[in-house]
Image 1 (cartoon, helix red, strand yellow):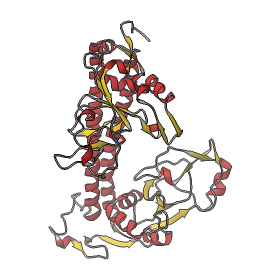
Image 2 (cartoon, one colour; image 1 turned 45 degrees about the vertical axis):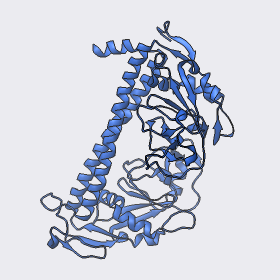
Image 3 (tube, rainbow, N blue to C red; image 1 turned 120 degrees about the horizontal axis):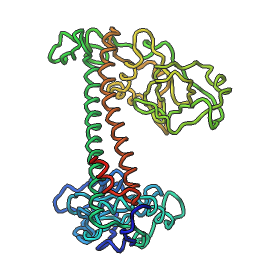
Image 4 (cartoon, rainbow, N blue to C red; image 1 turned 90 degrees about the vertical axis):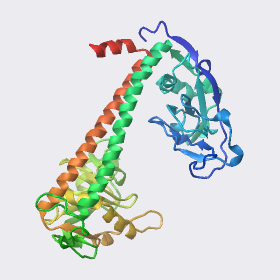
Length: 437
Protein backbone atom coordinates (compact mmCIF):
# COMPACT_ATOMS: atom_id res chain seq x y z
CA UNK A 1 0.00 0.00 0.00
CA UNK A 2 1.53 3.32 -1.06
CA UNK A 3 1.81 6.58 0.85
CA UNK A 4 -0.42 5.57 3.75
CA UNK A 5 2.02 6.50 6.52
CA UNK A 6 -0.45 9.03 7.91
CA UNK A 7 -3.40 6.61 7.85
CA UNK A 8 -4.49 5.18 11.20
CA UNK A 9 -5.59 1.69 12.21
CA UNK A 10 -8.80 1.41 14.20
CA UNK A 11 -12.03 -0.59 14.43
CA UNK A 12 -15.61 0.27 13.53
CA UNK A 13 -16.38 0.71 17.23
CA UNK A 14 -13.75 3.47 17.42
CA UNK A 15 -15.43 5.64 14.79
CA UNK A 16 -19.15 5.41 15.67
CA UNK A 17 -21.13 7.26 18.32
CA UNK A 18 -23.47 4.33 18.69
CA UNK A 19 -24.83 1.21 17.01
CA UNK A 20 -28.39 -0.03 17.17
CA UNK A 21 -30.64 -2.95 16.17
CA UNK A 22 -34.42 -3.14 16.25
CA UNK A 23 -37.36 -5.53 16.50
CA UNK A 24 -38.66 -7.96 13.90
CA UNK A 25 -42.38 -8.29 14.76
CA UNK A 26 -45.14 -9.51 12.44
CA UNK A 27 -46.17 -6.51 10.35
CA UNK A 28 -48.71 -5.53 7.75
CA UNK A 29 -47.26 -5.82 4.25
CA UNK A 30 -47.70 -2.15 3.39
CA UNK A 31 -45.83 1.12 3.67
CA UNK A 32 -46.58 3.94 6.11
CA UNK A 33 -49.44 6.20 5.00
CA UNK A 34 -50.73 7.85 8.18
CA UNK A 35 -48.58 10.58 9.82
CA UNK A 36 -48.53 8.85 13.20
CA UNK A 37 -47.38 5.47 11.88
CA UNK A 38 -43.87 4.05 12.19
CA UNK A 39 -42.23 1.55 9.86
CA UNK A 40 -39.52 -1.08 10.12
CA UNK A 41 -36.99 -1.50 7.33
CA UNK A 42 -36.74 -4.65 5.23
CA UNK A 43 -33.25 -5.90 4.43
CA UNK A 44 -34.00 -5.00 0.79
CA UNK A 45 -33.77 -1.34 1.85
CA UNK A 46 -30.01 -1.97 2.02
CA UNK A 47 -28.49 -2.76 -1.38
CA UNK A 48 -25.11 -2.39 -3.04
CA UNK A 49 -26.82 0.05 -5.41
CA UNK A 50 -27.82 2.28 -2.49
CA UNK A 51 -30.56 3.06 0.00
CA UNK A 52 -34.27 2.45 -0.65
CA UNK A 53 -36.54 3.94 2.01
CA UNK A 54 -39.63 2.51 0.28
CA UNK A 55 -38.58 -1.01 1.36
CA UNK A 56 -40.32 -1.00 4.73
CA UNK A 57 -43.43 -2.32 6.51
CA UNK A 58 -45.71 -0.55 8.95
CA UNK A 59 -45.03 -1.54 12.58
CA UNK A 60 -47.73 -2.63 15.04
CA UNK A 61 -48.77 0.32 17.23
CA UNK A 62 -46.95 -1.10 20.27
CA UNK A 63 -43.62 -0.54 18.49
CA UNK A 64 -44.17 3.08 17.44
CA UNK A 65 -42.10 5.94 18.81
CA UNK A 66 -38.77 4.12 19.29
CA UNK A 67 -36.58 7.10 18.50
CA UNK A 68 -33.39 5.35 19.69
CA UNK A 69 -33.47 2.98 16.72
CA UNK A 70 -34.82 5.46 14.14
CA UNK A 71 -32.53 5.91 11.15
CA UNK A 72 -31.24 9.38 10.27
CA UNK A 73 -29.52 10.90 7.27
CA UNK A 74 -25.82 10.15 7.62
CA UNK A 75 -26.27 6.70 9.20
CA UNK A 76 -24.66 3.58 7.76
CA UNK A 77 -26.67 0.34 7.65
CA UNK A 78 -25.31 -3.22 7.39
CA UNK A 79 -27.37 -6.40 6.93
CA UNK A 80 -26.46 -9.11 9.44
CA UNK A 81 -28.90 -12.00 8.85
CA UNK A 82 -30.26 -13.78 5.80
CA UNK A 83 -28.88 -15.67 2.79
CA UNK A 84 -25.08 -15.50 2.53
CA UNK A 85 -25.15 -13.13 -0.46
CA UNK A 86 -27.41 -10.72 1.43
CA UNK A 87 -25.36 -10.58 4.63
CA UNK A 88 -22.74 -7.85 5.09
CA UNK A 89 -24.39 -5.58 2.51
CA UNK A 90 -23.63 -1.95 3.35
CA UNK A 91 -25.26 1.35 2.42
CA UNK A 92 -25.03 5.00 3.46
CA UNK A 93 -28.26 6.96 4.03
CA UNK A 94 -27.95 10.34 2.29
CA UNK A 95 -31.52 11.33 3.22
CA UNK A 96 -34.60 9.62 4.61
CA UNK A 97 -38.15 10.15 5.74
CA UNK A 98 -38.78 10.10 9.48
CA UNK A 99 -40.22 7.28 11.64
CA UNK A 100 -38.34 4.38 10.09
CA UNK A 101 -36.46 2.01 12.40
CA UNK A 102 -33.96 -0.81 11.84
CA UNK A 103 -35.01 -4.44 12.25
CA UNK A 104 -33.21 -7.26 14.04
CA UNK A 105 -31.67 -8.35 10.72
CA UNK A 106 -29.49 -5.27 10.37
CA UNK A 107 -27.21 -2.96 12.33
CA UNK A 108 -27.39 0.81 12.25
CA UNK A 109 -24.15 2.77 12.71
CA UNK A 110 -24.04 6.46 13.61
CA UNK A 111 -20.53 7.62 12.66
CA UNK A 112 -18.60 10.21 14.65
CA UNK A 113 -18.43 13.01 12.09
CA UNK A 114 -15.12 14.39 13.42
CA UNK A 115 -13.44 11.02 12.84
CA UNK A 116 -15.01 9.45 9.78
CA UNK A 117 -17.01 10.50 6.74
CA UNK A 118 -20.18 8.35 6.70
CA UNK A 119 -20.12 7.78 2.95
CA UNK A 120 -16.42 6.86 3.16
CA UNK A 121 -17.14 4.40 5.98
CA UNK A 122 -19.88 2.67 3.98
CA UNK A 123 -17.55 2.35 1.01
CA UNK A 124 -14.67 1.08 3.14
CA UNK A 125 -16.85 -1.61 4.76
CA UNK A 126 -17.76 -2.82 1.28
CA UNK A 127 -14.13 -3.49 0.30
CA UNK A 128 -12.54 -6.92 0.27
CA UNK A 129 -10.73 -7.05 3.62
CA UNK A 130 -13.62 -5.85 5.87
CA UNK A 131 -16.04 -8.09 3.97
CA UNK A 132 -13.74 -11.10 4.44
CA UNK A 133 -13.37 -10.31 8.15
CA UNK A 134 -17.17 -10.25 8.56
CA UNK A 135 -17.92 -13.35 6.47
CA UNK A 136 -15.19 -15.39 8.17
CA UNK A 137 -17.07 -14.81 11.44
CA UNK A 138 -20.56 -15.42 10.10
CA UNK A 139 -22.33 -18.55 11.33
CA UNK A 140 -25.35 -20.61 10.33
CA UNK A 141 -26.58 -24.11 9.65
CA UNK A 142 -27.05 -23.41 5.93
CA UNK A 143 -25.93 -20.80 3.40
CA UNK A 144 -29.55 -19.75 3.03
CA UNK A 145 -29.68 -18.48 6.61
CA UNK A 146 -26.53 -17.10 8.22
CA UNK A 147 -25.81 -14.23 10.62
CA UNK A 148 -23.09 -12.50 12.59
CA UNK A 149 -23.05 -10.88 16.02
CA UNK A 150 -22.93 -7.11 16.46
CA UNK A 151 -19.46 -7.39 18.01
CA UNK A 152 -18.13 -8.85 14.75
CA UNK A 153 -18.99 -5.67 12.88
CA UNK A 154 -17.79 -3.42 15.71
CA UNK A 155 -14.42 -5.20 15.87
CA UNK A 156 -13.85 -5.05 12.10
CA UNK A 157 -10.40 -3.49 11.50
CA UNK A 158 -10.19 -0.32 9.40
CA UNK A 159 -7.38 1.77 7.95
CA UNK A 160 -8.44 5.42 7.83
CA UNK A 161 -6.86 8.44 6.15
CA UNK A 162 -7.23 11.89 7.72
CA UNK A 163 -10.79 13.24 7.63
CA UNK A 164 -9.93 15.81 4.95
CA UNK A 165 -8.81 13.04 2.59
CA UNK A 166 -11.88 10.97 3.47
CA UNK A 167 -14.08 13.90 2.48
CA UNK A 168 -12.30 14.25 -0.87
CA UNK A 169 -12.62 10.52 -1.58
CA UNK A 170 -16.30 10.54 -0.64
CA UNK A 171 -16.87 13.53 -2.91
CA UNK A 172 -15.29 11.74 -5.89
CA UNK A 173 -17.27 8.54 -5.30
CA UNK A 174 -20.52 10.38 -4.57
CA UNK A 175 -20.16 12.29 -7.85
CA UNK A 176 -19.90 9.00 -9.71
CA UNK A 177 -22.80 7.59 -7.71
CA UNK A 178 -24.96 10.57 -8.67
CA UNK A 179 -24.06 10.10 -12.34
CA UNK A 180 -25.01 6.42 -12.09
CA UNK A 181 -28.39 7.16 -10.48
CA UNK A 182 -29.20 9.90 -13.00
CA UNK A 183 -28.33 7.67 -15.94
CA UNK A 184 -30.34 4.79 -14.48
CA UNK A 185 -33.29 7.18 -14.21
CA UNK A 186 -32.87 8.01 -17.92
CA UNK A 187 -32.89 4.28 -18.75
CA UNK A 188 -36.06 3.75 -16.70
CA UNK A 189 -37.76 6.71 -18.41
CA UNK A 190 -36.77 5.46 -21.88
CA UNK A 191 -38.20 2.03 -21.07
CA UNK A 192 -41.53 3.62 -20.12
CA UNK A 193 -41.48 5.69 -23.32
CA UNK A 194 -40.74 2.53 -25.32
CA UNK A 195 -43.76 0.74 -23.86
CA UNK A 196 -46.01 3.63 -24.90
CA UNK A 197 -44.44 3.72 -28.36
CA UNK A 198 -44.83 -0.05 -28.71
CA UNK A 199 -48.52 0.20 -27.81
CA UNK A 200 -49.12 3.01 -30.32
CA UNK A 201 -47.20 1.40 -33.17
CA UNK A 202 -48.88 -1.99 -32.72
CA UNK A 203 -52.39 -0.54 -32.67
CA UNK A 204 -52.13 2.47 -35.00
CA UNK A 205 -49.09 1.75 -37.16
CA UNK A 206 -47.32 4.24 -39.44
CA UNK A 207 -48.94 5.61 -42.59
CA UNK A 208 -47.34 6.03 -46.02
CA UNK A 209 -46.07 9.50 -44.98
CA UNK A 210 -44.12 7.98 -42.11
CA UNK A 211 -46.49 9.42 -39.49
CA UNK A 212 -48.24 7.64 -36.63
CA UNK A 213 -51.90 7.29 -37.60
CA UNK A 214 -54.45 9.27 -35.61
CA UNK A 215 -56.40 7.20 -33.09
CA UNK A 216 -59.63 5.47 -34.13
CA UNK A 217 -61.70 8.05 -32.25
CA UNK A 218 -59.91 10.87 -34.10
CA UNK A 219 -60.09 9.31 -37.57
CA UNK A 220 -62.63 6.44 -37.64
CA UNK A 221 -62.45 6.14 -41.45
CA UNK A 222 -58.86 4.90 -41.18
CA UNK A 223 -59.90 1.85 -39.14
CA UNK A 224 -62.02 -1.28 -39.48
CA UNK A 225 -63.60 -3.59 -36.97
CA UNK A 226 -62.02 -7.02 -36.44
CA UNK A 227 -62.15 -9.99 -34.05
CA UNK A 228 -59.45 -8.15 -32.09
CA UNK A 229 -61.15 -4.75 -32.10
CA UNK A 230 -60.40 -1.70 -34.23
CA UNK A 231 -57.35 -2.06 -36.48
CA UNK A 232 -55.99 0.08 -39.37
CA UNK A 233 -57.69 -0.72 -42.70
CA UNK A 234 -54.35 -1.77 -44.18
CA UNK A 235 -53.87 -4.46 -41.51
CA UNK A 236 -55.13 -8.04 -41.37
CA UNK A 237 -56.00 -10.49 -38.61
CA UNK A 238 -54.64 -14.03 -38.81
CA UNK A 239 -53.36 -16.82 -36.62
CA UNK A 240 -49.71 -17.01 -35.65
CA UNK A 241 -49.46 -20.12 -37.80
CA UNK A 242 -50.65 -18.18 -40.89
CA UNK A 243 -47.53 -15.99 -40.74
CA UNK A 244 -44.88 -18.64 -40.14
CA UNK A 245 -42.93 -20.94 -42.42
CA UNK A 246 -42.01 -23.27 -39.61
CA UNK A 247 -42.11 -23.85 -35.86
CA UNK A 248 -39.17 -25.85 -34.53
CA UNK A 249 -39.05 -27.49 -31.12
CA UNK A 250 -36.71 -29.97 -29.47
CA UNK A 251 -37.96 -32.88 -27.43
CA UNK A 252 -36.41 -35.69 -25.48
CA UNK A 253 -33.39 -35.70 -23.22
CA UNK A 254 -30.93 -32.88 -23.80
CA UNK A 255 -27.44 -34.15 -24.71
CA UNK A 256 -24.88 -34.32 -21.94
CA UNK A 257 -23.32 -30.95 -21.11
CA UNK A 258 -19.62 -30.33 -21.75
CA UNK A 259 -17.15 -27.62 -20.75
CA UNK A 260 -16.95 -26.31 -24.31
CA UNK A 261 -18.55 -26.88 -27.69
CA UNK A 262 -21.79 -25.54 -29.15
CA UNK A 263 -23.50 -23.02 -26.81
CA UNK A 264 -26.79 -24.41 -25.47
CA UNK A 265 -29.57 -21.84 -25.12
CA UNK A 266 -32.10 -22.81 -22.46
CA UNK A 267 -35.33 -21.15 -21.41
CA UNK A 268 -33.50 -19.34 -18.59
CA UNK A 269 -31.31 -17.60 -21.19
CA UNK A 270 -34.31 -16.15 -23.05
CA UNK A 271 -35.39 -12.82 -21.57
CA UNK A 272 -37.92 -10.23 -22.68
CA UNK A 273 -36.35 -8.96 -25.89
CA UNK A 274 -32.87 -10.48 -25.74
CA UNK A 275 -30.79 -13.60 -25.12
CA UNK A 276 -28.71 -13.48 -21.93
CA UNK A 277 -25.60 -15.62 -22.49
CA UNK A 278 -25.07 -16.16 -18.76
CA UNK A 279 -25.14 -18.80 -17.45
CA UNK A 280 -23.89 -20.56 -20.57
CA UNK A 281 -23.86 -24.33 -21.04
CA UNK A 282 -22.43 -26.32 -23.94
CA UNK A 283 -22.97 -29.60 -25.76
CA UNK A 284 -20.32 -31.48 -27.71
CA UNK A 285 -20.00 -30.74 -31.42
CA UNK A 286 -20.68 -34.40 -32.25
CA UNK A 287 -23.96 -34.21 -30.32
CA UNK A 288 -25.14 -31.10 -32.19
CA UNK A 289 -26.27 -32.79 -35.41
CA UNK A 290 -28.07 -35.56 -33.52
CA UNK A 291 -29.92 -33.06 -31.32
CA UNK A 292 -30.88 -30.58 -34.07
CA UNK A 293 -32.61 -33.06 -36.40
CA UNK A 294 -35.96 -31.24 -36.10
CA UNK A 295 -34.55 -28.18 -37.86
CA UNK A 296 -31.59 -25.82 -37.89
CA UNK A 297 -32.27 -22.32 -36.52
CA UNK A 298 -31.34 -19.33 -38.67
CA UNK A 299 -30.07 -15.89 -37.82
CA UNK A 300 -33.14 -13.68 -37.27
CA UNK A 301 -35.42 -16.49 -36.05
CA UNK A 302 -37.56 -15.65 -33.02
CA UNK A 303 -37.41 -17.65 -29.78
CA UNK A 304 -40.48 -18.07 -27.60
CA UNK A 305 -40.57 -19.82 -24.21
CA UNK A 306 -43.63 -22.02 -23.79
CA UNK A 307 -43.29 -22.46 -20.02
CA UNK A 308 -41.17 -21.61 -16.97
CA UNK A 309 -41.15 -18.73 -17.80
CA UNK A 310 -43.98 -18.44 -20.29
CA UNK A 311 -43.82 -15.84 -23.03
CA UNK A 312 -40.25 -14.61 -23.04
CA UNK A 313 -39.29 -13.54 -26.57
CA UNK A 314 -35.90 -12.93 -28.18
CA UNK A 315 -34.26 -13.03 -31.58
CA UNK A 316 -31.23 -14.98 -32.77
CA UNK A 317 -28.74 -12.27 -33.72
CA UNK A 318 -25.72 -14.41 -34.60
CA UNK A 319 -24.93 -16.70 -37.53
CA UNK A 320 -22.85 -18.96 -35.28
CA UNK A 321 -24.13 -22.39 -34.35
CA UNK A 322 -26.40 -22.51 -31.33
CA UNK A 323 -28.21 -25.46 -29.76
CA UNK A 324 -31.59 -25.05 -28.12
CA UNK A 325 -33.14 -26.92 -25.22
CA UNK A 326 -36.71 -27.78 -24.36
CA UNK A 327 -39.43 -25.41 -23.11
CA UNK A 328 -39.05 -23.10 -26.09
CA UNK A 329 -40.00 -23.00 -29.75
CA UNK A 330 -38.20 -21.37 -32.67
CA UNK A 331 -40.35 -19.34 -35.04
CA UNK A 332 -39.26 -18.96 -38.66
CA UNK A 333 -41.24 -16.16 -40.28
CA UNK A 334 -42.96 -16.52 -43.63
CA UNK A 335 -42.93 -14.03 -46.52
CA UNK A 336 -45.74 -11.86 -45.09
CA UNK A 337 -44.06 -10.86 -41.85
CA UNK A 338 -40.63 -9.53 -40.88
CA UNK A 339 -38.83 -11.46 -38.14
CA UNK A 340 -38.11 -8.40 -36.02
CA UNK A 341 -41.69 -7.13 -36.37
CA UNK A 342 -42.86 -10.54 -35.11
CA UNK A 343 -40.56 -10.17 -32.09
CA UNK A 344 -41.91 -6.71 -31.22
CA UNK A 345 -45.51 -7.81 -31.80
CA UNK A 346 -45.04 -10.64 -29.28
CA UNK A 347 -43.50 -8.20 -26.80
CA UNK A 348 -46.55 -5.95 -27.03
CA UNK A 349 -49.03 -5.86 -24.16
CA UNK A 350 -52.03 -6.77 -26.34
CA UNK A 351 -50.45 -10.05 -27.46
CA UNK A 352 -49.18 -10.81 -23.96
CA UNK A 353 -52.60 -10.23 -22.40
CA UNK A 354 -54.16 -12.78 -24.77
CA UNK A 355 -51.27 -15.18 -24.24
CA UNK A 356 -51.53 -15.24 -20.46
CA UNK A 357 -55.31 -15.54 -20.63
CA UNK A 358 -54.80 -18.82 -22.53
CA UNK A 359 -51.75 -20.16 -20.72
CA UNK A 360 -52.45 -23.04 -18.34
CA UNK A 361 -50.64 -25.56 -16.19
CA UNK A 362 -50.94 -27.28 -12.81
CA UNK A 363 -47.59 -26.06 -11.40
CA UNK A 364 -46.26 -23.56 -13.95
CA UNK A 365 -47.86 -21.37 -16.54
CA UNK A 366 -47.49 -22.89 -19.98
CA UNK A 367 -49.12 -23.06 -23.37
CA UNK A 368 -49.59 -25.97 -25.76
CA UNK A 369 -48.04 -25.50 -29.19
CA UNK A 370 -51.40 -26.21 -30.84
CA UNK A 371 -52.99 -23.39 -28.81
CA UNK A 372 -50.12 -21.05 -29.59
CA UNK A 373 -50.47 -21.67 -33.32
CA UNK A 374 -54.14 -20.57 -33.20
CA UNK A 375 -53.49 -17.27 -31.39
CA UNK A 376 -54.78 -14.31 -33.41
CA UNK A 377 -52.46 -11.44 -34.28
CA UNK A 378 -52.87 -8.21 -36.26
CA UNK A 379 -50.23 -7.49 -38.91
CA UNK A 380 -49.79 -4.71 -41.50
CA UNK A 381 -50.16 -6.13 -45.02
CA UNK A 382 -47.36 -3.84 -46.19
CA UNK A 383 -43.84 -5.03 -45.41
CA UNK A 384 -42.76 -1.41 -45.84
CA UNK A 385 -44.98 -0.39 -42.92
CA UNK A 386 -43.60 -3.24 -40.85
CA UNK A 387 -40.10 -1.97 -41.65
CA UNK A 388 -41.00 1.57 -40.55
CA UNK A 389 -42.37 0.25 -37.25
CA UNK A 390 -39.28 -1.89 -36.70
CA UNK A 391 -36.99 1.05 -37.42
CA UNK A 392 -38.59 3.26 -34.77
CA UNK A 393 -38.52 0.52 -32.12
CA UNK A 394 -34.96 -0.49 -33.00
CA UNK A 395 -33.82 3.12 -32.62
CA UNK A 396 -35.45 3.27 -29.20
CA UNK A 397 -33.77 0.01 -28.18
CA UNK A 398 -30.45 1.42 -29.35
CA UNK A 399 -30.90 4.50 -27.12
CA UNK A 400 -31.73 2.28 -24.14
CA UNK A 401 -28.74 0.02 -24.81
CA UNK A 402 -26.36 2.99 -25.13
CA UNK A 403 -27.48 4.46 -21.81
CA UNK A 404 -27.35 1.01 -20.16
CA UNK A 405 -23.80 0.48 -21.39
CA UNK A 406 -22.87 3.91 -20.02
CA UNK A 407 -24.29 2.92 -16.62
CA UNK A 408 -22.22 -0.27 -16.69
CA UNK A 409 -19.11 1.73 -17.57
CA UNK A 410 -19.73 4.19 -14.73
CA UNK A 411 -20.23 1.32 -12.27
CA UNK A 412 -17.02 -0.32 -13.41
CA UNK A 413 -15.16 2.98 -13.01
CA UNK A 414 -16.61 3.52 -9.54
CA UNK A 415 -15.76 -0.04 -8.48
CA UNK A 416 -12.15 0.39 -9.57
CA UNK A 417 -11.83 3.78 -7.88
CA UNK A 418 -13.34 2.46 -4.66
CA UNK A 419 -10.78 -0.32 -4.53
CA UNK A 420 -7.91 2.09 -5.23
CA UNK A 421 -8.93 5.13 -3.17
CA UNK A 422 -10.38 3.38 -0.12
CA UNK A 423 -7.29 1.24 0.35
CA UNK A 424 -4.72 3.94 -0.43
CA UNK A 425 -3.31 2.33 -3.57
CA UNK A 426 -4.13 5.63 -5.27
CA UNK A 427 -4.26 8.84 -3.28
CA UNK A 428 -7.16 11.13 -4.04
CA UNK A 429 -4.86 14.16 -4.25
CA UNK A 430 -2.83 12.37 -6.92
CA UNK A 431 -6.01 11.55 -8.82
CA UNK A 432 -7.22 15.15 -8.71
CA UNK A 433 -3.83 16.40 -9.90
CA UNK A 434 -3.90 13.94 -12.84
CA UNK A 435 -7.44 15.00 -13.71
CA UNK A 436 -6.47 18.69 -13.64
CA UNK A 437 -3.61 18.09 -16.08
